Image (cartoon, rainbow, N blue to C red; front, top):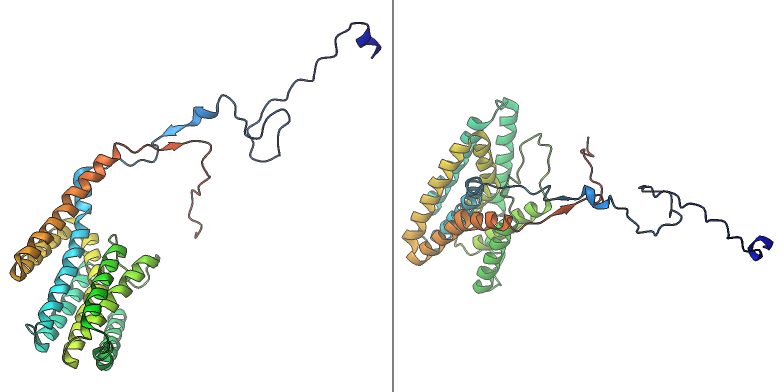
Length: 307
């Protein structure tokens, strides 16, 4: 203190320690908690994870959506003709057997490994139990919604079909092959359940037990196994997948045109929007995508935690 009075300057403060970029260790002396040095923005990267998409590739990928829209439209057409008594029980059962045999044939031809006799026997037993239980429960389905008005049934059925289409897994199949590692997602399971309930509501308006059994068998075959068959075709050959999809679109458009021209125009517009307009919008919106990445991002695992 005597030195200060004599005019001597106070000793300089100790030098501030150099700031270190560390995640742990507490607050560094002489720096704010949110302090960053001049190198903070040097690691900034813009649009690092943005995928540049090709219009033709996006249009090819959108074919899967149109394909399933056609499948659901054909199911609705079968429901309509059955309710109008245009299709009898024998025709429906013949259609069910044909679809079942065709589906098995596609699975056999597109499977990379030959199916064993044991697995085929397992399939036959499961299908036998499935059809037997469905036939036994047909009278229950027929009288399940007897006390509910038809307007309510059709409104709920349409809502369930829209929910089914909205939550459907268009990239794969909810029904997995034996030994598959990946389980179906929750949304795809909800989608399948919505389609099953919609089928039950439609079947409850049919006149006989045979009609109920045939329609329920047809609906469950399509909603449960048609995505699996389509996925196997796509996995086996993408060209075959495109050919099958366009043939299905042609059949659906012809069937809808035979029903009503207005429905044909609406469905044609829907197919064009899904296959052409939406991919074009997606490509155009990619130009305005702006993503910033840097050291402030959360850490991401670079490995599968299930391994």
